[in-house]
Amino acid sequence: MDLFERVSEDIKNAMKAKDKVALETLRNVKKFFLEAKTAPGANDILTDDAALKIIQKLVKQGKDSAEIYIGQGRQDLADGELAQVKVMEAYLPKQMTPEELEACWQQERKRSQEYQQLKAECESRRNASRDAKEICQSYLNDHPKAAEPLPEMEFISQEELERRLQQNREAEKAIQQETGRIEPDSHAGRGNSEIAGAGRAGCSVDCTD
Image (cartoon, rainbow, N blue to C red; front, side, top):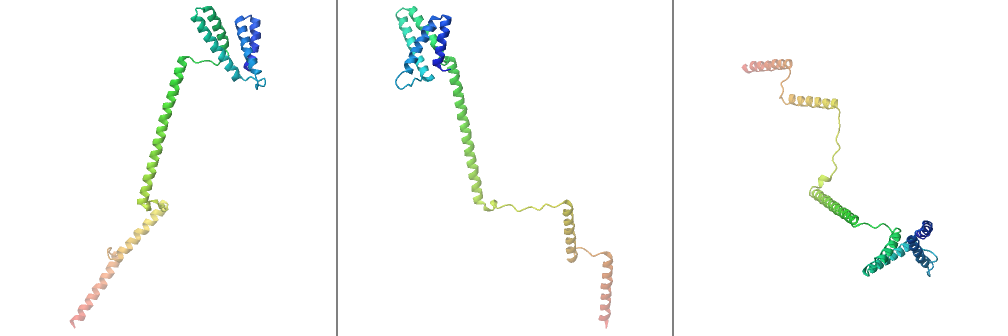
């Protein structure tokens, strides 16, 4: 139900309730509605926005008239105007009180401050990220090998590790034996000593001739 229909319905209700103030006020409002609908170019259409502007204009006129009557000492006429204003204000969007306006302003101010803080934090993080990127790039420029991929590592089992260590120990022992760092076994040592002794004996016999 649009405003035009709502006012028309409320006129019927005011007639049933015998509310003279509401009936007179709403009939006056509907008169202005009809004038707007039949105006050139309106095409018999009245939007709610246009209807609200009409009511707002009538409310302002009523308040202005009430002030004039009060200035003239005619409080009775001023009360009549204000009574009609009250009827029309029921169709207007609810107006915020000064306290509500202040609370709304404080809330918006807080949101603005939080937004500025968040914006500054994002800017700081972006700068830090940019600085870190520049530092990394500078390091890579000075150490180009750092950018090379790491060699693949070989993973072996514990048994394989022990086998390779045993091979290394045996190879090292063989090398030490060949270089004379480790004495031969005892049996092999005695055989070599006898051969060496015989050789020296033979040499001494030959030398006496």
